[in-house]
Length: 369
Image: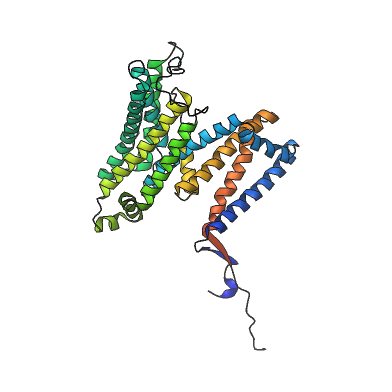
């Protein structure tokens, strides 16, 4: 192409950056987002943006109770994020985390309601764990089976499974509602605390955090160092290559989705037995979808997901604090947090790509007419 007709710049794939340069770009994106948020806050509301940012911080760290609630919320979101990671690495787009959480929560609640009066906690809690893991695994295995056998669309299949799980929970909420006609179950075993996770020290949320920390190390090791993790990576890279080297692709798909569903089932267990002590159709709180963004931003690295989970939960709690402290509606708070998330997501473009500008024109000698 003639140089004078070449575009001013073009987009090129960037060579892999060092981790500190990549995080530097992300931090710069957050700084620019905060500056833009400050301008919008001043122009639209007349409030001091520093006061608004202070409220965001106070919403998570204003007291010990707020801090532990923050840690609890991070742990649940992290649990779901590491749950969907093996499937995503295999390029099986599991957007059914919501449904897998719900069936895990439903199985836990069923054990607490039906067995709470007949089994001691030392037996009841292990039964709840097995039930929630099995329920989540089965819910993940169903779309995996159809994908492996008939190459169905896993995105639509797992999405539809969410609606089925929601209706299942809605049905049993009516069956178990207390009192009849209330439309909700209420706190399960409130007087006996049968099936409730025990407190560690003075904090009831600590056991959830410890369980998720263990699962995070497990998923990291499983993906990085195990034979199954290697097979997941090969299948995700190319199914043809996987078959050529002798990997049973159908088996890997079903096994991986069973694991993914089982870990989502654990998230349902933690929500019912460790936090809410009840089950509703909204108990998952959209975490099955939010986990997709968390996992993607972290490049499917379980340890990096700790940071991305913290960021998402921190912003959500900050938005809630802004709404209550300044009397602003939730939409404005969502605008502030949405801008920050947009800049963070957009920063991934500059981490993976670069703008290459056209070199300066070279002087050429022309003949006089």
